[in-house]
Image 1 (cartoon, rainbow, N blue to C red):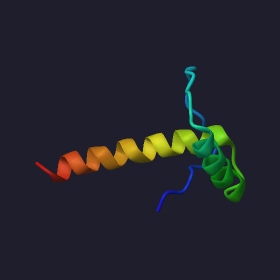
Image 2: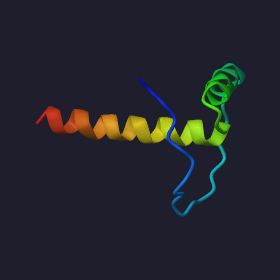
Image 3: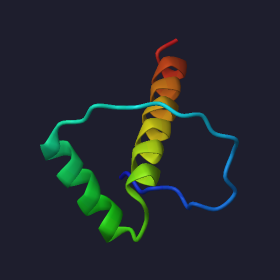
Image 4: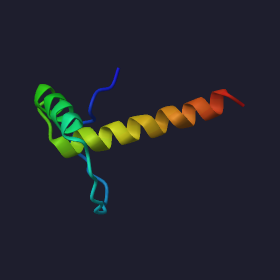
Length: 62
């Protein structure tokens, strides 16, 4: 199950713009409120979660 990461111990950052459907924004905002975190933290946590899962899938398929 996806859970946003804690916001402490931040790494160096870069800046990118994303265009997101309004319906997705609403869902992400709900997750942020439920987990008492920021919209940005939810997005970053989701990306990291997917990247880790993808690496695990690649490792398991070989």
